[in-house]
Image 1: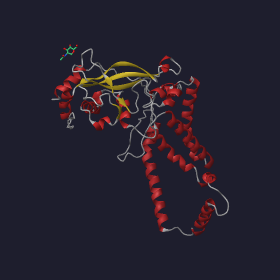
Image 2: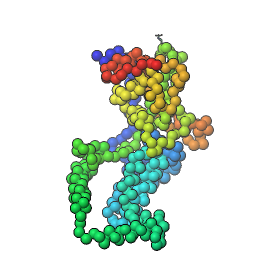
Image 3: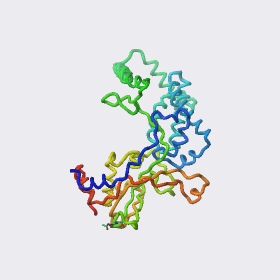
Image 4: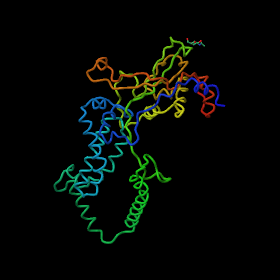
Length: 364
Ligand SMILES: *[C@@H]1O[C@H](CO)[C@@H](O)[C@H](O)[C@H]1NC(C)=O
């Protein structure tokens, strides 16, 4: 039923290669070694990560300890009065800033900063504005004094607002009950939600730290015979994810290249679990301009589309600064592990597309 292409894809596949070295409830958070791996194996590393990865071991231990301090203790500073709250805000923003600089994790960290802004009240931020009679600060103080004076009996609007605030507070407290119970449970579930509205969730990034960086590299060939030993395979290059070892890791924060991000995660799984990757392969076989606009380099630009496209699995490691590979201008050293998906042609893919109700990619 699935058609010739699917059979071909299943039969020609090499044995599954993918056993990412992940450990449940990663012990690297306990023995403080997580940062030995994180910079190299995070979804989309940037140049700062390259250098931080090679910092001394004691710095990596310190980074992991600081992470525990800021993520486990500092949030409670919010309840310890105004001064502790300001310290919380400063530490949290500093921490998120370091994360933004050390990886392309942008928007998540910018969002995490937002609640900390509430710690900086008018008195804390007052130094930003000139003082003295008639100044902006003076006018605001005057207005605040007037409002306080006029606040004799509560108005209808403010009563409604207060009622709405309290109701929201109660709702959030109630929705938090299963989340807190889960947090305290010995069989804690991560990255899950507890109600149909998906508000107040258990979300955790980096529960486990991948020990090795595995990439999927998409390649095409103009050769009529994909198995011919003289077939030349050329790499497609993504905008941000590692590909050509000589290309400097990218900087994209706070922009999020979604396709690059998904490619990093698809590498942990098989193509059967990510059928969108064959969809992309079909578009490449048709030289679809929209799909190609998501890539940085199309080796078939200005030429007829490739006859075959395949996905290859590679292990990537940062080169050592000052080492032989770095001297050759290489940021990465890579080694092929095996096939991710076998060579496929457009004709072979058509039944696969038809099965899924996807529009057929047609060569231009
Ligand atoms: C493709 O190349 C392989 C290896 O050289 C060869 O065995 C096979 O017969 C070729 N197929 C075609 C259709 O030419």
